[in-house]
Amino acid sequence: MKLITIAALTAFAAGPALADDLATEQARADYHQARADAARAQMQKEDAQAQADAAIDNAGGAQAQANDAQADADSARLQAQAAEAAAADLQARANAAQQQADASQSAATDAQAQADAATIEREQALARAHAAREDADDSEFPQ
Image 1 (cartoon, rainbow, N blue to C red):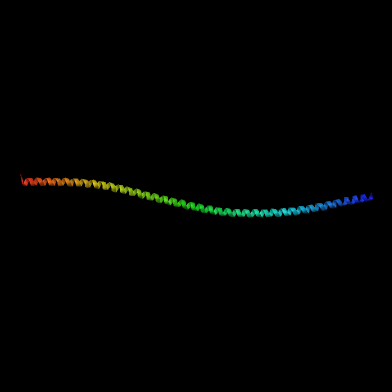
Image 2: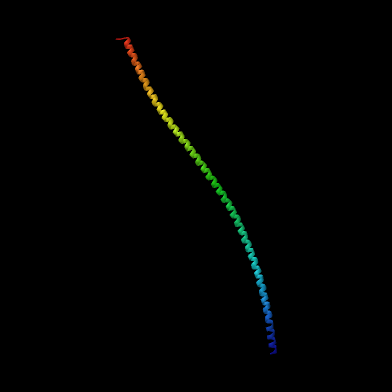
């Protein structure tokens, strides 16, 4: 019985030492696992930062393209406005030319009417002159 008691006492005394060894080993394992987790988290953070930097670069490129497109649109709008102004100016000139053409046509119509009236007056004057000559011939040489 003494042997069993000694063995029991030895086991009982070794129990806390074994428990301490197990706890120490578990703490070491937990420590190493935590360090590995921290290293993985650091790598994930660095990957995420690299992705964020790439996204920022892409956004900067997209913004530059958007700015270029806006500048092109503004330029096209200004060109369209200039073309519209030029078209309006040409239309105003065409309208003025049409008014001048209408005035010239009216003046030509008036001039033609005066020419027609002058032709009629000439023909009437010639007819009176002819009639006067016949009257004069008849008076000079009565029959």
